[in-house]
Image (tube, rainbow, N blue to C red; front, side, top):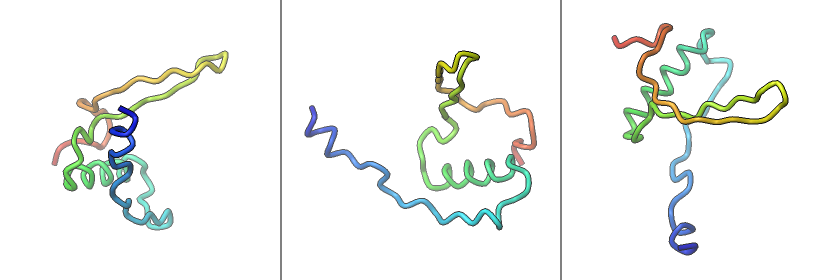
Length: 77
């Protein structure tokens, strides 16, 4: 199993360059650009993400979410 897992590609593609100065002012716009680029590139489940938080004691928690009902400017056009 170890050899099999180590044979799988990790970060097989190089991400596109990112210029913070050229990024839109609203983070929602940048997220939408990245999400659409991932879908256009054939990334499966591009709308799945891990949300990680910590509680008042600093204990981490993480959960996988599927973005399916955005409440900001991320609406179909």
